[in-house]
Image (cartoon, rainbow, N blue to C red; front, side, top):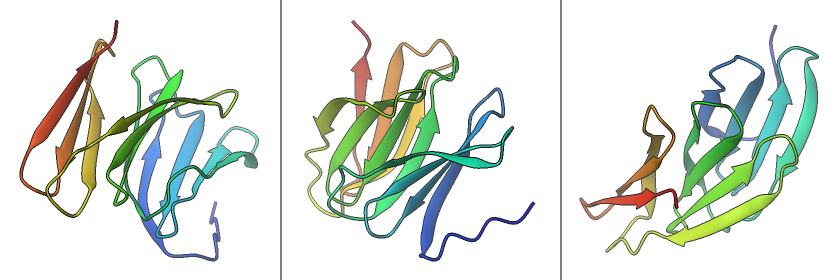
Length: 122
């Protein structure tokens, strides 16, 4: 399979169950593709700058996106709904990396200013 997006791709992530492929571009958009059907599932556009990192939760229900706009966003994968926005508060350059813990209870973000922020599920 070869997928043409037509824009500069900054980051990609595959859900743990290999059902979804997330593609983040340099304009702040995320494309979710269903790998089983090879069809577009959703287009997510709430960031105002480049997507630097994407990560799926271990259960595949949620996805995190980190952006140069200095925010981390949590999305519901099946509905495409934006659930939460966290400010990275980086000194500069935004959020470069996001990752869920193995149990899905903690989200870590690597910030451009050399800091790591952690958020725990409540």
